[in-house]
Length: 493
Image (cartoon, rainbow, N blue to C red; front, side, top):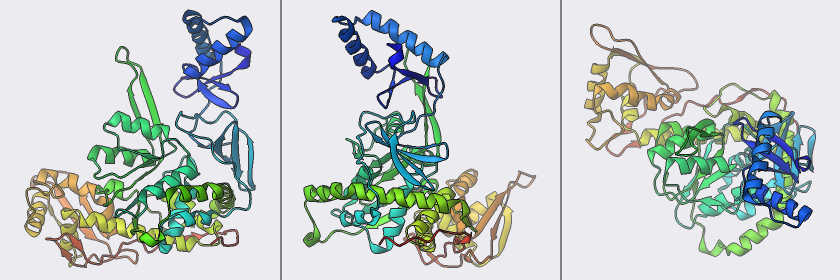
């Protein structure tokens, strides 16, 4: 019976078997059913629980102490210089700079119960065809397609994908199509979880997790998503009766949609792609059954086009150098390579991504009184030095915040914490601050308005009562390639 299985363990020393092209935990119903079936076929008798438990204990020990350690991935993987994509049914796509092929899957992927097999891709397809089923404005189509293709790249941080718009703007359909393309599942759009542990488990079990129709984003959920999209480790107690932990190490593609813009915290905002969707004209709507039938008919070609593009991007990527790296630097560099592979459109992608970063900064400032006040305070000066107490009193006089305003510190002790939350946004808009070590007079603080070609003077005006930002430059104009030698490819549009 042992000879029918390939045993191994993962980095958490959990025991697994590789059976018929599938990675299966030894402590799972699938293994219990397999052993019971094999025993019945060999003896004509049922396998009792005690015997089954003894067999599993021995095999588990062999897997942990006598077998090799394997890194397991969810749907997409990086192995031996190639990208891999799990199709299910024992097949995978191996992608390199020289092309792609469907092969028998090696021991790479752990699949969860909700995940479904993917359609087998065909060569020569066109990824732009997916826009027959999507409600995306023309100016956003390249950025969205680049994002979707980037979801097939393992182990890099991916921005939070955040479409929002009125009822009838097909937010859920957009997210479901991305899910069907990247990680087909019985669970497409995820309902907002109620607690921390449930959220972590959901993220871990999905290659791409898309949260549907969210009305508000709690602070704890925002913090988890911010860590999970760039990479984070989480653990929880396995049983109340012991000290063993279940460890989740995740770096996932994550999206969320809602009627309103949900993201308000700066640390999540600058990890995001914001997408406004317009309501579909009733005359242009089609029934869902027709929408998905058309998409499923085209999906094999779309996937083939995605893998063609990704292969070309792998050839371009090593030579791409950007003179300015935004927060999601890996995504920006890969995005440029993908856009070049889509017909030499790297500069067009960077322009679209710049515009999205600009909108992120505007949204942060519009929703943050302290950010508005600091920019207004520094609008007519090059630098300012003083102490935290003086700075707090000065900024408070300008802002005159209400007691309910959580975006302005209640006292000088909290000024540093609030400034740190918006530090990246202020830097993008050309204002730098430095807080020193306490001396006899207090804690020194200084603000500097940088004058460089990539950053505005931040001299534009702000309406503090309505929190409206009027035309601030984003400071990201030099997000341009310093050098690259992209491969010339025909444009698929």
